[in-house]
Length: 611
Ligand SMILES: Nc1ncnc2c1ncn2[C@@H]1O[C@H](COP(=O)(O)OP(=O)(O)O)[C@@H](O)[C@H]1O
Ligand SMILES: [Mg+2]
Image (cartoon, helix red, strand yellow):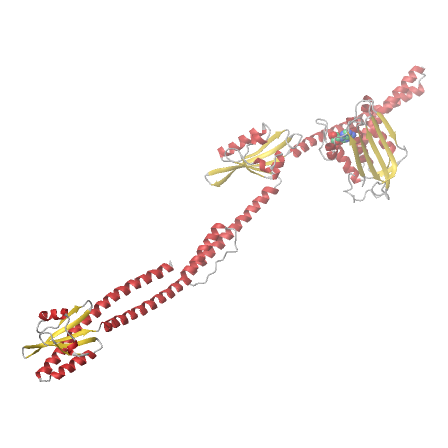
């Protein structure tokens, strides 16, 4: 643009110079004409004056003087017929009139000087010399063209010098303008492009403000605008990272759907719940990823939220399959997501895995039932005890004070035996119910016997061979009631797993901790030849509420047992395998309980766990 400006200026100066030259040339020409007329006039006057005073020699002198003038190349005087009398240079005889000059003679008016051109570009002025009304001759003055051109040249030189100075001054002005306008504008232009191409990149800004004019202010305003955009962007980024981290880390499943019920976004928890990878959700519909009828129900809910533009809360969805092998329960809420107040753009669904809660509720119901049954059994046992006492006493009287036949006394002995068994059962039942809260030194033989006698009925029905391998006199400082609970759970599970004709072994030996040989205590083994456990079951057997017994199981037995063992600072080890290529299936629980008189002290090794 600035170069264009300079060019325009040069052009206009050139045009101006051309016009000026034309004008000057014209003026110089006009001057020359006037001058020639004047010079011819004055020479004629001088000549007529000289002739009047009878001094023709002066005429020659005045011709010579005229010839000396710088603007005159040649001057001469002729007689009326055109014969040259005097010349400014050379001899009069050598000079004759040019035919063009001679042709002028009849055209010359008596009082007017005449100026004419001849031989192309020679200019000459001529004036008649008159004295007392008589024509005495003509005064001829020829202009010096070189002198004229010199005049024109000096004017031209002036013009060129002026033009040159003007162009240099303009260029300087343009340079100055370039510095203060075009350079900052270029910087601004580059800045705008940088902002458009890489809005994230901040090292291009702020733009340098080198000038203090309106453009400088414009650049400053631009810098402020860029800074405020950057600030807004960083605020937006903060909010986005906040939302992202919430979406990624919230312990709830989150999914967003468009109007066609396709997933637009889900979080990892949701992906874990459906068992499909995060990216595979996008663009798919619910029936493609979830089993029916849950998919349909959830889809209807999403559509309902789009239609009603209001949230739907606490929808309970239950299904089978997916990553959790067992049944699962979800608690879902759906709500509209608006990007402007008039329109619902997406529907967000929050899903909470309520399977554990559901299972705990069920287990709690079962445990409550069990506890109530236990209480009922205890009160029945208590009630039975009194009449049983009476029966035992009566049988004693019958045996000792009546003369009975042998057969009758046999029957009495059998009745006494059975009454004794009833008494034992009621006693065990009561013992289970009334658990002591303080550790005592308990007899282990008695403790294990009491557990087995509790399962006597089932053991003999299933014809399970029981192998007892423990010293009847062995004792241990422990919470006897709770330890009894542990063995009841283990024996109960073993019987659950064993089919008719199986074997069950219970052992107890004084031993040392297998992790810390310094520590002495008792090692128990409960082993069965039952079905055994698959590795996944073995992994999770100690988890609360983990059970493979759909209806009858609570999944609490091993969990409670583990807690009790930890409370005793003990250890438990589980080995189990299912029937595989001729190997017998079975399960072995090994338990070590330290014989620790300081047991009542708070558990230090609460973490001492499965090994
Ligand atoms: N002796 C065993 N043989 C085979 N499986 C067992 C044995 N003991 C426990 N299990 C498995 O461990 C699971 C958890 O046992 P438990 O905590 O006692 O709960 P529940 O007996 O109520 O199922 C059982 O469901 C069963 O699958
Ligand atoms: Mg159990």
